[in-house]
Length: 200
Image 1 (cartoon, one colour):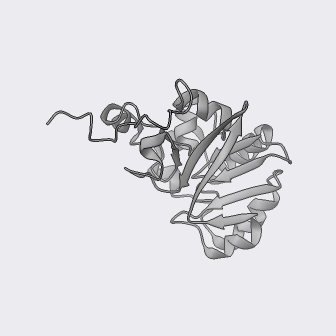
Image 2 (cartoon, rainbow, N blue to C red):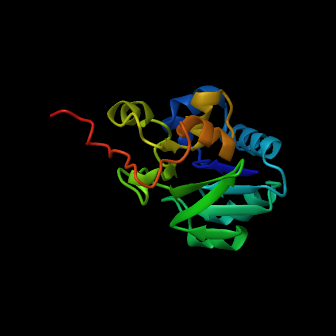
């Protein structure tokens, strides 16, 4: 199974102050770390692939400690603004941005993965899906109103907790169920961009 997640901020005491959802859910950063890691391990099996879209942990020196507590072997990281280059030593791959295909139920889908939410991404007009983190779910409602046909979503734990009630990663089939209506567009069709539906 393929999974996506972002914005764990393991060991980051300040995230409990800046994110009211976390402040209400966790009494300490240690409790947050333990619950996030437990929930990730409950969903993601050792042979699965987890694409983590940035902001792994607060202190670079603790990255190995947190990585050892995760059961998944294939951890691919898209570097976030809080990720040190030293994280590369603890993960399968580490890049700034990834554009690739994933297959589910016999269908192939194009994905543009990045830590940051993009207004336009590679393959936007032909149905490519954009997944990101960084914004902790705070822009989702406004973006969905502005661009109702967008194939994009925040897969960070804060956004997913808001959608599911659990601090967990989201699977490839869950993303497809949420974002893809009617399968991949035909080659002839062109999906509108974010400002093409706005009447000014």
